[in-house]
Amino acid sequence: MDALPEFRIVSPTTLAEAIAARADNPKAMPLGGGTDLVVNIRRGIVSPQVLIDMNGVQELHAIGVDEKSIELGASARLSEIAEHPAINKYYPVVAQAAAHIAGPTHRNMGTIGGNLCLDTRCIFYNQSEWWRSANNHCLKTTGTICHVAPKSRGVCFATFSGDLAPALLALNADVDIAGPKGRRTIPLEKLYIGFARQDVPVTEMQGDGKYYLSLRPGEIVTAVRAKNTPGLRSAYDKIRIRRSIEYPVAGVAVALRKDGGSLADLRVAFTGTNPRPVLLAGTAELCGGVFDERVIKGLDALVRDQIMPMKTTFTPGHYRRRVAGVLARRLVSRLFEG
Ligand SMILES: Cc1cc2nc3c(=O)[nH]c(=O)nc-3n(C[C@H](O)[C@H](O)[C@H](O)COP(=O)(O)OP(=O)(O)OC[C@H]3O[C@@H](n4cnc5c(N)ncnc54)[C@H](O)[C@@H]3O)c2cc1C
Ligand code: SF4
Image (cartoon, rainbow, N blue to C red; front, top):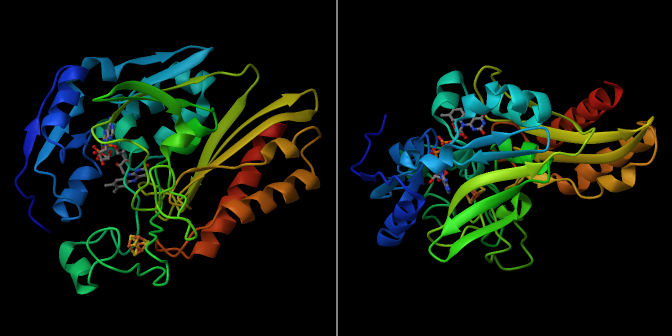
């Protein structure tokens, strides 16, 4: 195993101190539970000389939940979310997604902020330094080509695999951000810019597996919030290689509302497939009737169009797309019937 290199930890106790610490150390990285970041440091994937430990900032630990809304501070622990009675009652998709992340010890350390800002993953990237150097590295680090798609024209397809993002996207959540220029709130969907398009240049709004977040320099995520919709039913499910502890082969969050016997609202979001979590566009057109063959075929077509996994994990892309479609169909059916 690679040795952990030297780094310094700064421990702010207020948000203002955290932002000032980032301004003083522009290459510093925020530290949540460290369950992904420290692994990446050990592997030489990133080498920040300063880590800003977000855990001492009390306001980031706040959890506010009732039947009208949910607000989760960036330093709230995944285990707290998974076990929280009101989250399980009113926002089961969020509690279930948190409960599906890694193993119990990771959930005790891992935070909302770290999970939402989780680095994208690839079999050519999440490897030791010597493994990657034997391949001359790749675009996401210091190399010049993408091993997954050598003709990708500078685009990286590493996969976003955090479980909470799709759950919160299905609730139409907003994310609070703070930085040197003040605070802002944006739709969570806009945090993720991993579109990986080869026909347009990578920009702040149009990124890929390497530039996957729209955070500006020095910004940190402080909280995520959503409003409830009366009658909304929601759930999360995922397929993983090892059921006890594993990133998703594909993860699906569904939130739907019925009006009498017909589907009145449908939101479906995925992780583990594209370089961003994908809130499926076009589901409104599937509403207005019962859950029947028309909805199943429509859902399959939307998944085929928008879920485009590459060979970035141990499972082939086309298999992950099929898994995503089947999981979505099962979950929609279960929530509609239940
Ligand atoms: C064996 C194993 C299995 C795993 N399985 C899963 C899984 O099934 N599903 C899953 O989703 N994850 C999984 N993970 C990854 C990880 O454990 C979780 O995603 C966890 O939620 C990360 O949170 P953290 O607080 O530990 O993040 P950290 O590791 O501390 O940080 C992750 C990234 O987020 C940034 N960051 C942290 N806080 C903030 C903030 N407030 N604002 C801006 N950026 C921030 C960090 O700088 C870093 O880039 C697994 C990890 C391991 C080792
Ligand atoms: S998709 Fe390509 S560039 Fe991105 S991490 Fe994998 S091999 Fe590297």
